[in-house]
Length: 125
Image (cartoon, rainbow, N blue to C red):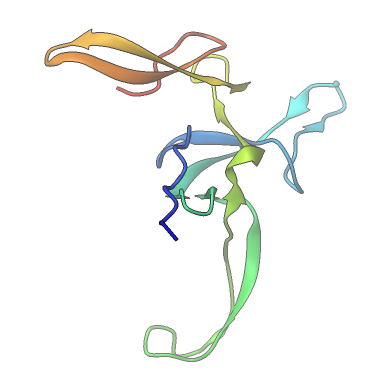
């Protein structure tokens, strides 16, 4: 059986993302505005189709005493979130946006970049 190629993902390490589903899904405040849970992507796992987001999906992990952690105990850390539950934050309007691709002319020829569909702002510098 041949190896499956990892999926091409629209999210990269360092992006600011908004969680759209799950326990951190958007909620309404008393004025009726949506309140989003945002975080920076720490790591992308393309084979699993998941990403680690800073401060999102926190889980408690029990660790044995080791040389690094002689005390042991319960550690709280981020767990991976499925990519389909995340959307990129629009850099201009600070709301969730879809991603598009376009080519721009640079110093070294043409370059394919990602841009926010809502505002047209280029995400890759």
